[in-house]
Length: 177
Image 1 (cartoon, rainbow, N blue to C red):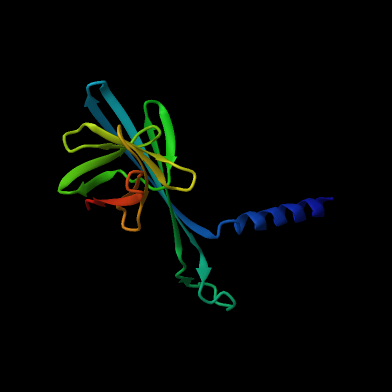
Image 2: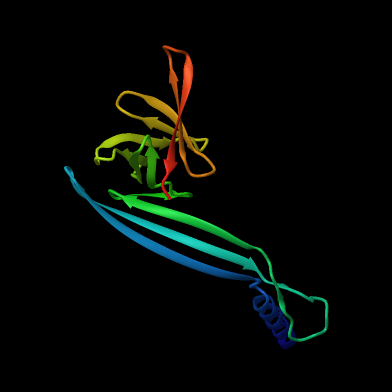
């Protein structure tokens, strides 16, 4: 009985000692923004977690040498952003908040509780962007509704249908870097 217990303890110890085969680095950045407008002060808390995971691989895994060198392996990076505005928290895979240029005017896109809000250069609310199920956006102003998406360069591309001319016009807001 004593031998069985020692054997089970040795087995569990060897499983535990070989459990970690990855290097993990995690970093959390928190940004608190307070904006004041005619409706009062609003606090937006943006928390971004960047996690880097690298598998540990040995150069000569089959050799009998005691001290072995680690082989370079690819690093998998995941970034998750959580935005809390007006008491509502939502998780964003890629944050598209930035300044965009169109016809020499600078527009600001910021996150809100349901998606994004676009502001005119004078600070007035111009439109809202709401995410659809296929990672595109509905762009809604007081007078028009458009279909939008972000291209590979991060620019905001809007496609608007005009029923009078039966054509689709494409408008591209260039991201300011």
